[in-house]
Each structure stands twice: as structure tokens, then as C-alpha cells.
Image 1: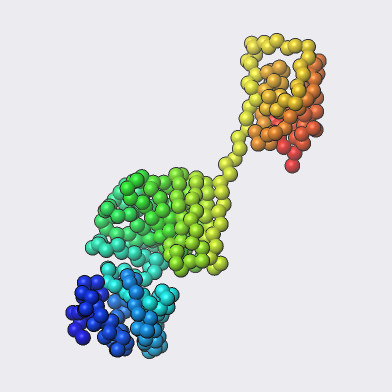
Image 2: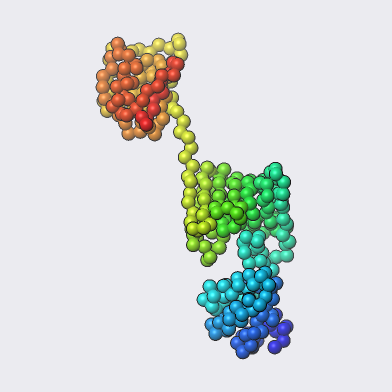
Length: 349
């Protein structure tokens, strides 16, 4: 069998007759597979179409035997190749597309063009800023590095491979997603700011979003137990457990701000105070507004802590504000704090 015809077959350029010749050749000579598939060749082929089962079994047996006779590096490559053949129902053909390594962890995902990979390393003890051609930038933490294709700006997605930890500030581009591959995860954005922490020695991968919105998925949906999709919003953090292969989300709960009841008037402001005032199942927010205006004093509260809480009662001009607030607090499991010339209403712990 001529090598030229086999090369033509791997490039998917064969006629039907030529294709059958090559398949028949490998079927009858499975030991020849390794002659045409050396270590570099294994990195140059991706699955494209089905291979007859009996041929796949012969090839798998041949690759397995060869594994234990080669060096450790060769062994790992061939074991990976054999595993791929088995996991693809022992029936997938490797067709030539482009030079690519086999694992995301080694920074590998070529899309069929002639770009070369650029590597930026931070071997210092300080942060290192890396400017990308699209206007985005990466802040590499110590002992971290990234790889990406040059030219970085093309018609395809913007791909970056990370080892370690880095902050990404991504320029918005609706036509080209920005994808960061970090070990077992792929984080996809159009334009935002986020941090990925994916050191090899750590059992977890962390993706923390600072602004915008990102989507986090498994880098290899076929090989991962967790192959879900999570959308992060500012302040959210995804934590992926590499040992148990599960992901969890720590949602951001922004600190609630104190709200001031209806502002009391200034020193020269005079409000008409009726002799009495009745509350009839009134929401506490309205009660505090009225009391603040009636007694000309500042009252603060947390909206979530008084939500769905009400007060019924009659207030007289001679009643002290602190007495009224204490009555409201007792009935609604609240506490009253006096801070100089203002009152702060809090939920009782």
C-alpha cells in the first residue's frame, strides 16, 4: 500500500474505491497502524467518521501491546489514543485536520489555521499585565501562564489557555466570544471582568465574576461527569471540585443598605401635629415614615427586615417616640438602637 494513498485517506480526499482499499489494508494488516501513526501523528488527528468495529479492535489490541514496549512518554500518548478508540464505541476514524495536542491542560485547541501559539509566563513574585491585540488584558498572578494564538484577532473566537490564576478584563465583541480554558472548565464571555484560579496542585477551580456576565461549562463535555452550564453574575463564584467532578455556586448577596424613613424637615420646618394618629394594620415602612415626619427625627431600617410586618395602634401627641418604637419592636421581633439623634431599627437575632 502506498503511503501517498494512506495520507490522502487521512486527509479525507479518497474516492470511495480508494477508501475501501485503505480500510481493507488496515483490516488485513493491523500491525501497520503504528507504522503510520507515530507519536506526532496521534496529536494530528481528530475523530471524523466511523471505522469498522473489527478493525478498531485489532488496532486497539495492537496499540495496547506497543504501549508496554515504549518509553513512558510514548506509553502515555498511546494509552490516551487507545482510550479514545474504546470510548468512541471502538469505532471512530482519526482523520487529519490540523496539528493539535490532545488535552486542554496542555494548551491545545487548533481550529485549522496557521497561527502559532504565544506563551506569556509570570515567573516573578509580582503580578504581570499582558495586553492582548483586541484591547483586552490579563493580569497574571505569580507562577501562572497563558497561551493563545497569534494573530489573536481573527474571524474565530478569542481563545486563551490558562495555567494558574489570572484576572481577565475583556473588551466587548459581540461577533467573537472570548473563551478561557482552565483545566476542566471553559469560561465564555463577550466582554467583562473575571478571575480564574486553576493551579494544577489545587483540588478546585474557581471562577469569580467581577462585572458583566459569563458562562462556565466543562471544557470537555464528553469526558466530564459535570457537563452543565452555569451563568454567573457580578459577585458570583463557581467552585469546581476536580476530585468529585461537581460544581457549586456561591451567589453574591450584596450588603443591604439602611433606608432612611421619610426625611424629617430641617430645624425651621414645622409640621402640624394632630392630637392623635391611628395606624390600622399599616406596613411598618409607612409607620416609620409617619413617625419620622411627626417627631422630626431620623429613623433608619433594613427593608428586608420589616417586609410583611404591620402595626395597629393609636398615637397621641403626648406619647414619647421611644415608647412607640419599643411597642412596635416587641410586636415584630425588632430591636431599637439610639445613635445620637437618630433611631436604627434592626431585626432581633
